[in-house]
Image (cartoon, helix red, strand yellow):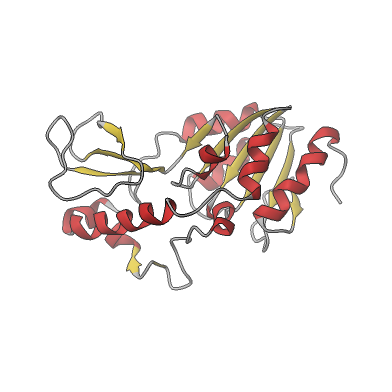
Length: 230
């Protein structure tokens, strides 16, 4: 069985990873434009670096939850690809081997001025002003900010077209272009949305009303039969 997972912040929330945006549209007390845009970077790079350094420190303190672990275990019986909007590494730490990050990786830095960008793995270490890539430009988080292109979106659409089963978990399907990926599910694919508080449900999707860490493990037996969900 060929399975693609489209995951968002809700899959990592049970691990204790804070979702960036709260009810007031702020990310940890900051306006999105301040910490997640090229304009914010140019205006105050120290603030942006401090923001992501704090996120990286927090990531080092949490662990994959039952949802991440269940998805990784599915690899023993199925072909599984993960397409995630998350910048954390919890899918990989759980053991998933094929993970596509639409919005970049928190554990990577990249050059700020060179094209193509120089990308390097930094783990959970901070980035400071004055830290430069081998080409001589200031390092910045390897995060796709608002207003920047999403280079992985076309390969992600191809992943969805490839799949027999499409599972959406932990995302409100409000942020484009990622929200449009469900439209690439091929006719006849089995499509499921796992969400504790389902909002927008794509056409043709069945709904499992549960948190990610409870709902995803429930799908393990279903994947062997693809009988109607109850």
